[in-house]
Length: 279
Length: 314
Image 1 (cartoon, each protein chain N blue to C red):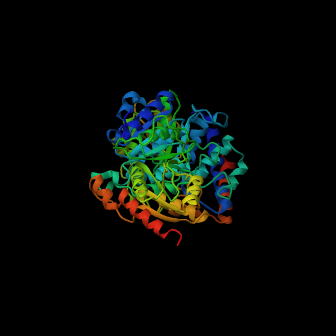
Image 2: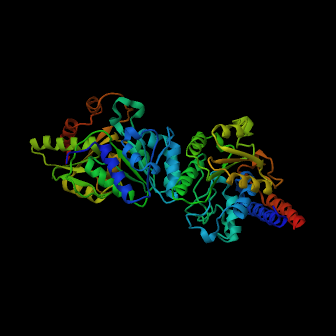
Image 3: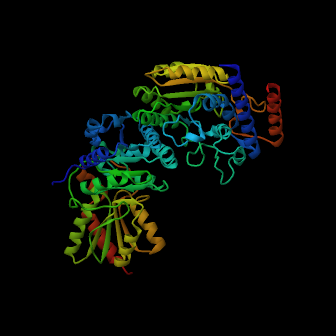
C-alpha cells in the first residue's frame, strides 16, 4: 500500500476511535471494548475496500456489511459519520431517547446500516441470505460480515458455517473479531475456541488470519479473499478488546463499561496526543 | 374441481406466484417432501434453498434474502418454525422489518403420530406477541391458495399455520378472500361460533347443524386471519347473538379465544365459551383419537354451545 493511502487510513482510524470514545463517553456507558477492537477492520472496509457511500446507499449492487456483533454499533456509527451518511453531531445522541443511533445496529433507524443485529449468532446467516440474493441477481458485489469470538459460542454460527460453504458463497467475506474475551471472562476459560482457524477450515471455508489492528495487513487479507472463487472466506482478526484506550485496553471490564467524565477526558487526551504525534 | 391436499394447494400457490414474480423464493429445512414443495424445487431449482435441519439459520437466511429484494417463503413444522426459530423470526425478520413469510405446518393435533414433541399448541400465542405480524390459518384449499397469494404481497412478515394433510373444500372456486376479513359461512341469531383452521371450521359447521335440530340458530364464522382480528365482524355478531364461541386447534390461553375475549371484554363484554387445549401438552395418536381426547369436535362444540345458551341472559 502506498504511504499516502496508508496515512489516510491511519488518520481515518484515529478519528473513528476518538469519536467512539467521545460518543460513549458522553452518555457515560456503552459497549466500549468490542467497539474499539474493530476500528481497523471497519476503517479498511469503508475507506479502502467497500463500494459503499451515501451516494449509492440505495443501490442493490453496493457492497453490504452485517455487523453481527451488533453491540459494536458505535464503532460503525463513527465510520458512517465520517463517510457522510449523517452529521458527526448525530454521534453524540447515542442511546438517548429518540436517537437514530441505538446501542445495537438497526437498519430502519440509521442511514448506512445494512442489517439489524443485536441477538448474537444471527448475522452470518442473514449475510448468507444477502449473498444468495445478490448472486442470484448476477451482482458482482461482496457481502461482508463481522462476528465476535464470544458470539461464536452460538450454535447458529456453525449452522451458517455449513450453509455458506454448501452454497459455495465466494461473494461472502466474514471476519471474526478475536479479542479473546467473552463478557464473564477470557474466551479460553468461558468457552474455548481452541484452534479457531481449524474449525472454519473444517467447514470448508477459505481461512486467513491477521493482526486485526494492522490496516495494511487487513487490506491485503481482503484482497486475497477476493481471489477466492468457490468458497466463503473467514478472516480471523487477532485483536485486543478496548484497543487504543488505556482505561479499557485488554480489560475484561471493557465489555459494557461505565466511563466517568474524568476517564473520558483522559482517553480523549491520549488519543489527541497520538493524533498530534502522527499528523 | 375436487379438493386438493392442503399442501398441494400451498405448493400450487407458490409456483403460480413464482411464475409471475421472480422475487419469490422458497426455503425448507429438510422437510420439502413433507411440506409438499418438491414441485417448486423442480420448477425453480435456483430459487429453492434447503437449509438442512437448521431452522434458525433458515429463518435468518430468509431475512437476508428479503432485505436484498426477494420475497421468501420459509417453512418447517409449526413446532420448529415457531418455537425453535422464534428469536430469529422476532429479530432478523420482524424487528428488522424483513418481509419474510413463515409457514408452520402440522399445527396442534395435526402432528398426530409425531406426538407431543411435535404438537404446537402455543405457536399462535408466540406469534401474537410479535407487533404487526399477520397470522392466518385457512380452513380449506381454496382459501389457502387465495390467502397465500395475498400474504406474498402484504407489506410485512406473515405466519401461515398450515394443516398440510387433508383435502376438502368449503368454498367454491373463485371465492375471494382478504387477510383480516373473516368469512360468514352461516348466518345465525342465537349464537356465533367463530372457528379457525382445517379441523375446527368443519366441526363448527356440523355443530351448527346439531344445534339447528334443537331450534338454535347458530352463525358460523371462518376466522381465517387470527391477527389482525376482524373486529368489526366479531363485534357485529357479539351484538347480534350475545353469545360467542371460539374454536381452535391450540391452547385457549394465548390463542384465538383469548384474542377474541380480550377484544370483547374491552368493547362489548359477551358470554363466551372457548374450545381448545386447556393447559396440556400434546400426545401421540390418530386424528380421531386426538380430536376426542382434546374435545376438538362437533359434539363438544354442540354441548358447550347449549351450556352457554343456558346461561345466556342470567
